Length: 312
Image 1 (cartoon, one colour):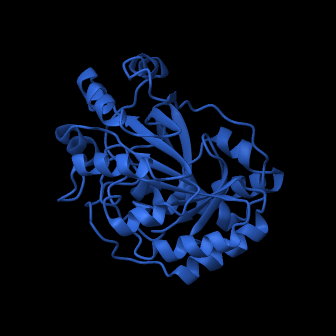
Image 2: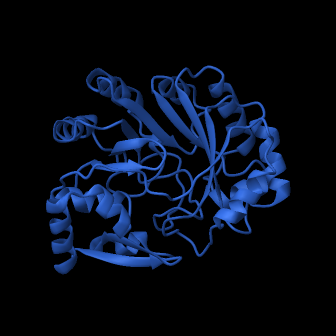
């Protein structure tokens, strides 16, 4: 499959064309409770590395097919900052992207590496995760690889926020009964008061999680939001569909997109044009796409990846 997926209509970043820097398998320094990929041992370094030439070839072709996008999103089946050639890749993307913004979705764990720190400064937008501010809760929710320390992460985020000139977003994902206590939120408050960012998104599980954990309701998120410091730019993330312009997808693009990001039927109708919808229904009819139900929401994924995406 291609290293490129989408375009998809992101709830927060517009029309996004994704780059998966670990397209063959999950490679991450966390094994988060809420990850949509199946559980896997957290690691400190990528073991399967995709060549830059492959990624750039895929990206160039995708941009020719889908020029009307807002952002190129660098992500992974895991943590994208673990990719050993990230600096060279971003340099090459910047040379061809034109007016399109670049964005990376990172769990923040590698930001203490000076090379990664400098590389992320080359991006237009950076989204960093911070699910907890105490060591105990951090280990419970994010299940990091050995040697990763939450105090170091918080210090790195703070330093980065004061030198980065692009748009910086932070994300906190709440899991019921894990990091949603008032004690944990006060610890997050202390950590975040020193951070300069455009927005702090607070959200919860809305896709099939790796472990048997539950998300919060909108009402619960809204209630928690009142306990954050009033000076913080808190934004409650809700799963409302933004207006999307349907696009044409080949069968391979449909399978790749659903592999990277499981979609509901509402997502699909918003994103796929009539021809792509016909291809999607053909893939369902022929057994190449299946559905899974989580928390009363039906998601569609490629049948060959049911084990990797299933709830454990």
